[in-house]
Length: 194
Image 1 (cartoon, rainbow, N blue to C red):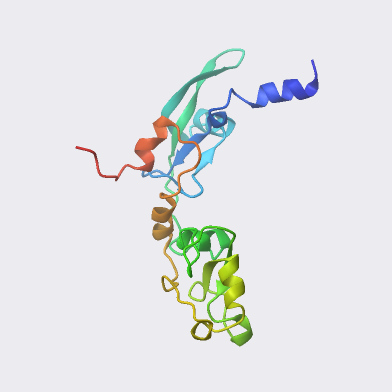
Image 2: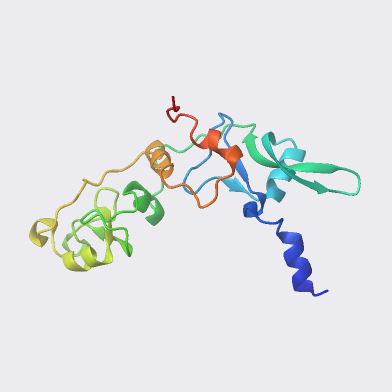
């Protein structure tokens, strides 16, 4: 038996995204929505055994040691509350998230980059209030021109977001895979169907 075959067999537990666990804060809300706060099964199991988290839901999958067996956690909640920062870091991902992954000039979602509303060559700063998500076509079209001189208009004025705003926007972009046990914790405040 080849080493590659043994490694692949040991590391992958017949998919369901390798049995990741959704990580909730002590208030039972996800630490983050985008990207979704997930731990690999090994990390969640170690945290549960060491009593750093409470296991809220489990998979049907069992792993065994020589003396015992454990069901894999699918949802875990931290014992200690982690206070989210009020001000998110100014990163490309957070910028795209604030602008909902759309060009702020034409609304396209293709070939996204970012643009300085007031170009840096004209004294524009790289800040939340001067940088927007833009598609490559609009970014090239605007070039180093001031917004008023470019003939283009912003769909929405750029503002500095709060962390809570980014969390709420992140809920609109679920990952490719959602386990059934995660749904109640991801959309706990969604309106119930009659």
